[in-house]
Image 1 (cartoon, rainbow, N blue to C red):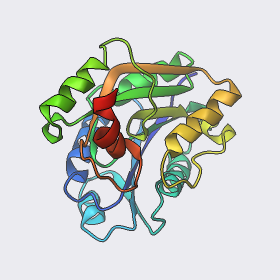
Image 2: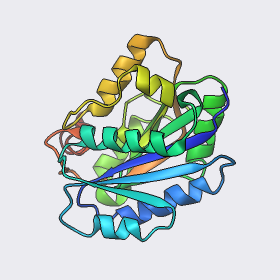
Image 3: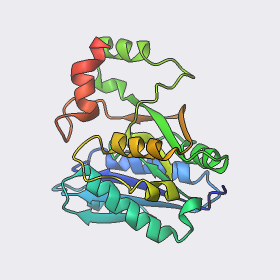
Length: 227
């Protein structure tokens, strides 16, 4: 189950304010890995400087697309990254995050280790940026998140999958939202080895009006204080 390469795929739509810190964190995590890490940003229907900023990072490949659909953007990015890695898909790990997120230094290395032990799919936890939340929202988030007990909620900002399993599940569907949940459901139907972990929690934007009507932004805005 050796992992020989990692493909990090990051969809981005008008994220000029946050893509820089995201890539800084991903590249820092890549430095701790002993295998090649291929970082791909999919600049999807951007009308700002997202692609320009991403191009400024050495070793980051940028795809400019006009899908305006996160499921399609992720799928395009993974397809390209799998081709670029040039290893058997059973030995390729696909690490997914979002352009408004910051990953910890152990984010990639820990996933590689889990993959080497036979895990096919890793569901990582996500923490909103507390600077974007009210004190009441922060308290509610802490009340629902016990360290060492990941809740298993699926987030594209922290999702890792073996390449061969991604292929068997037919990849990300062209959905405007919840494409991550959809993929995980299809992987579960295949009986793949899945693990939920909070050992490499990703910090993501706590904005409460996102790129779609639903998603994490709606959860923070409408549901967090009611859980």
